[in-house]
Length: 395
Image (cartoon, rainbow, N blue to C red; front, side):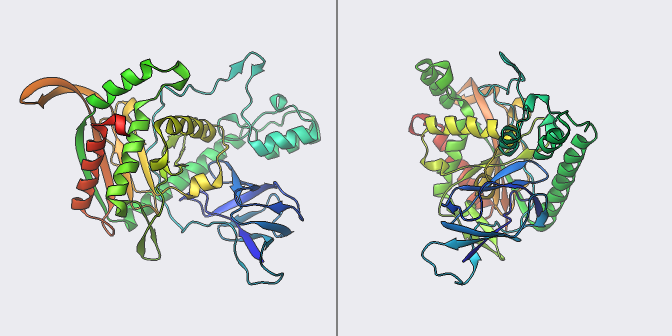
């Protein structure tokens, strides 16, 4: 017998509100199935189950807000007799706090349109969309009270009762306020508890951009790459060479991660940010990374991330380049032990083969946890990133 508990859906989360169950008592679930929708201060999240078995009992009802780690359901796991010792079924993340700087708007990822051939596009979570269909409510007729006007479960329920959109002009700022408060508390605590050290280096990215230009000429517009995926892949491969940066701080010590899941800091429309993971970043081709990166950004901004994407990152990459920032020294996102930042690409004189020539340069930074690594190891990591970007065809 196992417990499905309220997971840690983000480093600054202490509690979550159950929106709805996606399964029923008696249903069989497999590892990776969506079992529930949970509301945090940032978004509604699809929560996965991390074991296989049959749901025996729900312990928490929709609408209840419970702390992280609270048992929410009982699941009879396959291969275990009834009444066996209870072990966690979901995958809670060690309590952690901090918020990285946001990733910029990426030109290759078009913003979500608000108007289409059929009229306005409705921002609505998957759970709310399903409920609206079940109740016969037209989502386009509902006034959303979530961030950026997103339609929530409560909006649909109220619309079903009255058959008119509820006046909720005062509700939207409340979610934004709670998000900013969580971010502020997270940043302050991270800086108090983690002994940060900072490094930066200037990288000649001219070879990478030249290769990217030639590569994209062979592709359709839809299949073209952006230089951001080269940076993500270079970071992931560099972690193989300095693996201690790919660790989690747990119970007073660093625990190396067996896989590399790069978290991407994504700014949310209307304010706030999240840093979901691109799973097994080092094993993906550039085409796979581009596809998954675009999908991750779009789903983050439409409030449809999965719990594993928020709980799995082993390092975070952030960039403010398209906002005109030349360097960003971010705050480490616990329980991770490092954060990588990239600034904007600038054209400047550079010495190549004893000749001063114009080159495209980018500043890469590392925020490291001094309990785990030092400047020497951090320097080796940044050097590895630079070396990898000189041979983009091998990424």
